[in-house]
Amino acid sequence: MEFTPTPTQAEFMAAPIQAVRAVAPATLIYGPGGTRRQAALAGIPFQSDAYAAWTHERMVESLAVLSHIGVRHIVINLLRPAQLAEVGRYRDRLLTWLEAGLAGADAIVKWRYRGWRVRIIGLEALPELHAAAERVAAATADQPGPTIWFYLCGAPHTPWASLFASTASGIPASQQAAIQALYGEDIPPATLYLAFGKPFVAYDIIPPLLAGELHCYWTQRPGFSLDEPTMRQILFDYAYLRSTWQQDKTARYAALDEQRAIWEQTAVLGLGQRLGPFWYPQGDLLARIGDDA
Image 1: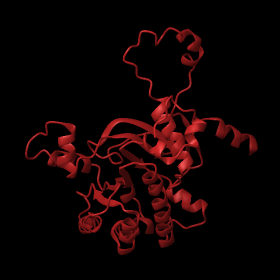
Image 2: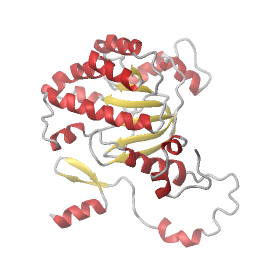
Image 3: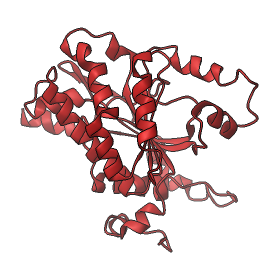
């Protein structure tokens, strides 16, 4: 189902799932953050095995939302080099948690139940997880999809090392050829990036070559907190509000003067403030919190 003409947001929010899937991106990059904050707010110690198990369930629920709305390739970052530079039990258990959560027997049962193909990428600096990556790829190879690409970046040089290694037999003729050489599959470049907190991008979150014209959204609920209403709001903006390109721009600027006040404002998306050890975006939400304090 596709809307003709363009729907209102209310119509899109209430539309059958087929209408949502019609505008979902083929590939989405998901950079969750704040999982320890989410656990702490739920009363779960982030140094404990209970944290890993609880967060894993939240992750599966969020991935299920993305699968349900029709994304065929979900690229999700779960490890950045800064995490490996930490100290304490969280750091000591981190790779064990990742191996069990992505390629353990219970995890594989979950992936197969969902019908997901699972791949683990970015492991050039993490040889201890190579066997896990091979195990889960083989165990889910016959699933109908979508494909979940878990990106674990263990060192700052990893994205570049993997990219240059893929050119050892020659420079690919196109982005798709390069993607095929690096990842072994024809993955459409991602057009939607969904992350948390501070607006920024990095190669240890967005894997090499997989970014197309990437429309970015940063939620402000920590951890794995996706639900379908939130994703429908994002997809409405992504598919309908941001689709402003016109081949014929003859009349595009005729009424621009009516919007002069909007374009002359000094607001800057991305500015924020510190509250304790955390960054928050500037905006009405923090003003309300300050008023209530």
